[in-house]
Image (cartoon, rainbow, N blue to C red; front, side, top):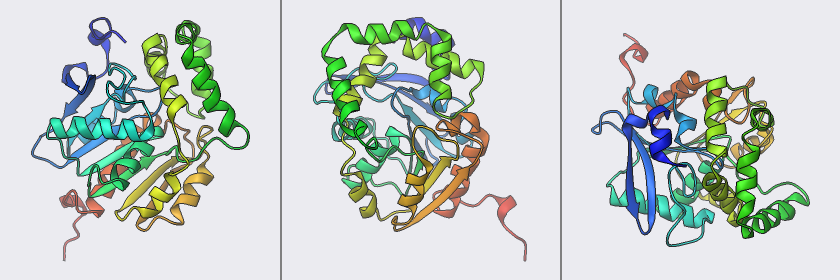
Length: 301
């Protein structure tokens, strides 16, 4: 995506900045008071920081908020020093945070961003107090698709013209709308337009395909079982991308797990109900002592 062209009307562009680390030019956005507890927001495959556009200003009342575009997504370039594997992306994000001296107390990861968050914590790349996963993408595709989809992505990625074809097809608003609807989410016209702008970028599509082609979720269950910190799962009951039953399964073996379901929402629950999801994040941060309880929650004696 071209920053100069998109910036004038891109969500929260006024708080954007760029940082180069090991050959990758990262796009990140920051809000809130730097002296407050820091929350890191990680989007899912095919999205950008815009996925948290309405969540960031709400969280900024209580946190120092950092959101980034993952490698090859939005305005961040592809990884310069490694392939976009789950481990490679996790190491890249950790290197960015280390260079910028950004130490998150809380990590929020949506979908594939949840897998990145779990990997960073389980592998000791970051040590937050708590972790929140929104519709986490933790399991391989069911059945034969487990092998077909990654192989297809690898084949498509080998042909440079394929991302351009995908991007051209996104010029059809109906196709983008169908894609959003397939997640089980109901977004506003403005939100759909942002996805359309991203998906008409061949570089963004290439980054998404590259991540699909190199993603290995097989070890995730073991990493989840190893987590020894509070983990909140937020799921949309109508999610058609990641089965809610998977999140319920994970809840049974997390050592310190909590669970919230928004029954009427789909995969993009934080975009459908940003105020409610932001409130759930704040309450969880209070329960885990990241934030002090607000005065209105303290009962008089």
